[in-house]
Every structure is written in C-alpha cells, then in structure tokens.
Amino acid sequence: MEKIAMLFPGQGSQYVGMGKALCEEFSLAKMVFEEASDVLHMDLKKICFSGDSKVLTSTENAQPAILTTSVAMFRVYLQEFGVFPDYVAGHSLGEFSALTCMQAISFSDALKLVRTRGQLMKAASDMHTGMMLAINNSDKNIVKEVLEKLNEQGNLVSIACYNSPTQTVISGDTQAIHQVESFLKQKKVSTSLLNVSAPFHSSLMESVAKSFTKHLDNNKYHSFKGKIISNTTALPYVSIEEMKRNLTLQITKAVKWSQTIGYLKNQGVTVAIEMGPKGVLTNLSKGHVQEMEFFSYDKGTDKKLLFDRLNVAPRPKYSLITRCLGMMVATKNYNMDTSEYMSEVINSIRILRNIQEDLELNDKKPSIEQMHYALKLLKTVFDTKRVPFQEQQKRFEKLYEETGVKYSF
Image (cartoon, rainbow, N blue to C red):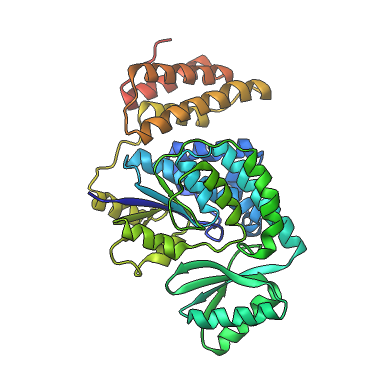
C-alpha cells in the first residue's frame, strides 16, 4: 500500500493564469475562488486568471491567491481520487494551506490570516528593503562563512530555507544580498533572486511575527486530521498550541524543507503530490529522494501518471452534492438585495460544502437525507437568487439526467 504525502507550495509559485483551467473544468474549484473573493471582498479570480503580474506578486495578494489555488486543487483531488494523504507539509505560506486542508483552520479564517500576514510583511518590507536569493550547488560552509562575515559588519542576512541538498535560500538586506550574489558569482556559483516582495524568514520580519501572534491568538482552531509537518521542526505537530507557536516562529526562522522531505522518506512515504501552482516543490525534490515519486497536480500529464500509480479509476465528476454546489455558484443572480444574498445563498453554499468535505475526508457516500437536504438548499438558493421558475425546472431536469436523483417541486 502506498503512503502518500501532500505538499503545498509557498510564495514565489504564483503565476498569472493559475487555477483558471481548474475552475473551467470543475465547478468545485470555481466555488472555492468565489468563496475567497466573498471573504476578502476582492476579485481573486481576476487577479489570478488575468491580472497584472505585479499585482499578483505583491505579498498581500500572492498569499491568499496561492492558498486559494492550493485548496481548490486539494478539493478537486479528493473528488477525483478519493485517496486521503497520510502526511501533509507546506513550504512557508503553504503550511497554512496544509492546515486548512486538514481542517485545523477554516478556509475563511485561513484567508483572513494569510491576507493579514501578507499585509504585515509588505508593511515591514516597505520600512526595510530586503530580498531573497536562491543559491544552487554551493558548499554550505562557504555560504555560512560569507554570511557570518556580513553579519559581523552589521548587515542583516541569514539562511531562510533549506530547500534541498543542492539549494539554500538566504534572506536579508538588499545590499547584503547583492554582496553575497557578487561573491558567489566570482566563485562560479549559480544564484537567482526570488520573485517575492519581502525578506521572509529573517530577523527583518520580527515586527511581523509580534503583530501576527495577536491575530493567531484570536483565531479559532480545530482538531486536525492526518499528520501535519511543521516548517520549523520538520516533525509532525502534536498540539494546537505548538501549531500556533510555530506559525509565528516560521516568519523569522528558516524553513527546514529538505529535512521535511527526509522525514517523509524515513516514514515510508512513496508518493508525494504537490497541491499548488507551478510545481516548484516537485522540481526541488525530484532526483534527490529515489524512494519517493513526485507529482504536480497543476500538470495534466502528472495527473494521468498519478491515476496509474495509485491504481484508481477517475471518479465521476458529478455527484449530486458537487453538482448542486456547482449550480449554486454558476446560476445567475437576479436579486439585488445584498444582505438577503449573503444570508441565504452564501450560507447555503457553506453548509453544503462542509457536508461535501466531511464525506470526502471520510470516504463516504451521501445518505438519502443528505441528498434531499442538498436539493432543498439548492431550491433555497434558486429562490433567493430569484431564478425564473422555468429556468429552475430546466436546471433540476439537467441535475436528474446527470445524477439520477429527482427533485419534486
């Protein structure tokens, strides 16, 4: 039996167009983006699908955008595969995606947290100019030595991420980063500046960590499913208090990603699936751990290979509940009363989505009562949106054709 780990990427993995194809194919993914836009009061679909890359890269936008894309992919994965992971791990921001998918934090709360996290980081970066540099195939002792010398001279620069056996990322003052870059260039070492707008995982983020702790303390947490690996320890969380503490620490401390992959390997994980845009973590780890095979859910070719590897047949796209959710989101709204829309439509979508998530996480099929309830919620949404009666009839007939379940008016 395969042991499966889910990997969730952090900032820098974003690209304009991410999530668009997924939403066009799966109404479940579209619903995730719709909810995110409602919670944050911003058009996240526009930012992700066709916006300006500078707007998307700005940390207060990139963080909720990547979280949303990752959560959408995870929910679609459960719908398509129905195989729950044994372990989950997220790189920096990705840790919030992992916690959300394991139900330790609600999606709406996670969106608000990472939006705030991004805003705090942006404010800090506006006060302290800084950047991050990836260093490839370099002797780690050389890197450590040059960082120590720069810190002795009053520069703020440190290791931010242990990404792989062949890649280390540093973070700090812009001037210090350029000095390291120039020094390593003379040593013929390959480097690249990261596409981020702040010096994450460094002491320059100390003010962010202090402010963010207050937001974490005021948030609600739940008992989580599965084993979630911490960035700062590269070990599974054992309590909610430890989780809150480490979510603060990871802002200023290094991400132990290489150690995390090593832990997963030692636990017998054989399949790692990246849930997020671009496949950054897949590319980082491929070739370094022979015992594990890595797949990026953002790549169609990898998804086909994954079906073969897990020896599962693709599930039908439409169960009754997922189709009801899709219709709730996609059907045009004719009601201009915002408060009525929020109280009835948004609430119905959230209730049904929670039912769907619970079914998927426990690998269950909906009961007769749950299916009847889903149909009643759909009717409530149609009525609240003031969908014409004939259009409602057509949509319910289509639902019956696709799922075999009939609704009686």
